[in-house]
Image 1 (tube, one colour):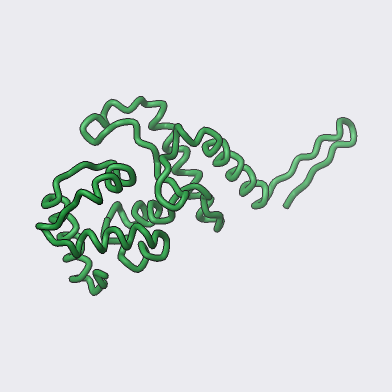
Image 2 (cartoon, one colour):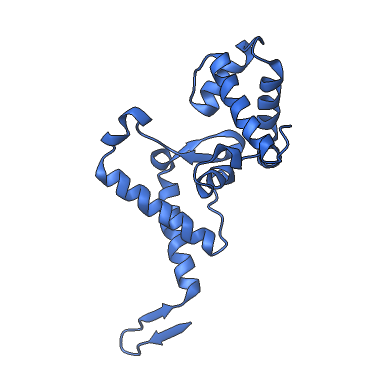
Length: 173
């Protein structure tokens, strides 16, 4: 670390890895202070990134928001490089991004470690089979997953996801 002190005006100029980490944390904290703009609350007091458009309208996201999201992403990456976990962001979201948005990267053991209730809910959902009664699950999936789909469609997605997990040697339970 380098420190320069001027006797004339009592300015202190510092540099080094500690300053870099502090600046990155401070910038990230600014995003956390406007959490409703950048983060969407999810299970277990964690969050995912807030989206302002659906996939169908993603091309209409303002350039300023895309730029700010790029800054947020870069800051999160630098924090991770320095071993600092972004406090609000769900580790499974990071896992998903790091593995090129591959849903299979969130295997059941990892899900159960971070979100045991969600793991239990999804396991029960899968065990119901295609003819089960989904009425008790509609609120959960609308609240935590922003989806409202028919059971057979969602069941198909989960089975496809689990089949590829099993073919890669992962457990489906």
